[in-house]
Image (cartoon, rainbow, N blue to C red; front, side, top):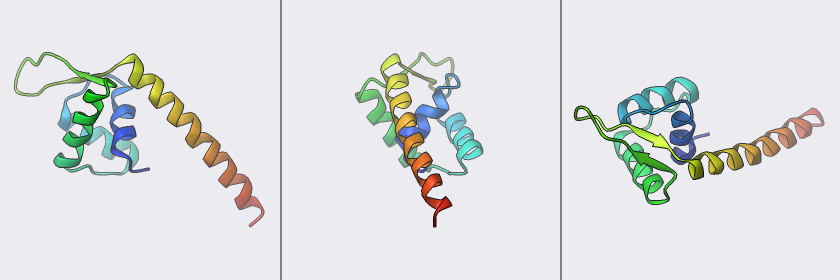
Length: 95
């Protein structure tokens, strides 16, 4: 899975993080290295949709937090992906 929107939401579901911490976390759990342009483009879209919010920064790094709406969207997408994975596994048994 390489959708930056879902990767950022999944990263933030584990707690608040700034951009670099998200990049490192995503690479660790998904094996995908998001470039800064891709990451910050996704962050902008997620803020516009109100699925994440920026928090006050103590230094130049701004942490982000998933919102209730973002958590709900992530749960829906995970359920949908689960159905796809289940179907694919069943079909592979017969291939």
